[in-house]
Length: 149
Image (cartoon, rainbow, N blue to C red; front, side):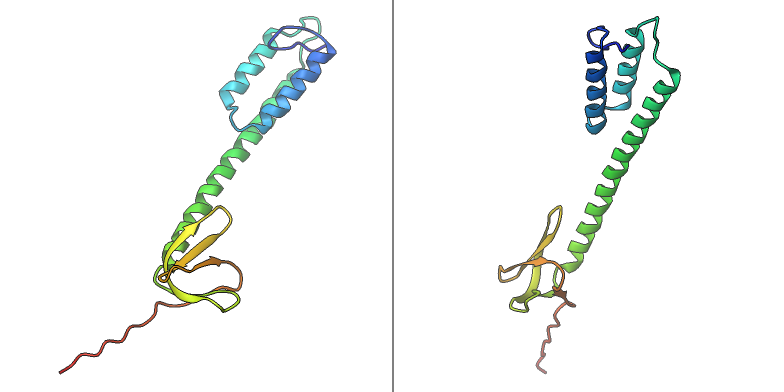
């Protein structure tokens, strides 16, 4: 028999409610380790003394939550790394020549906007070229100056 940690009710519906709440809590990144421990303590305080929760089940819940929390942190760190890498790549494009994949647009890159899934280069003459497969980015254009003697 399960006990609802909020209401203290014991029923099959409370079991379903607790499982649903735990599943949605696992999916939510806003639930942290302290919140999980508070929920676990509330569940222990309100359990039926004649049918207590199995210690193995408690440890399994704790381990599952810990894995979810680590995955969320890993994803967050990976997103930060990818964003930093994209910004570094974008800054390296400034001043270089770019040719669109269809070879209809060419120019010198004046700025680059970084989005979550792509980058868009803006040339010195205002043309926008998405940096995708097939786009060529060359070296900086050379400027020859003639000096009179």
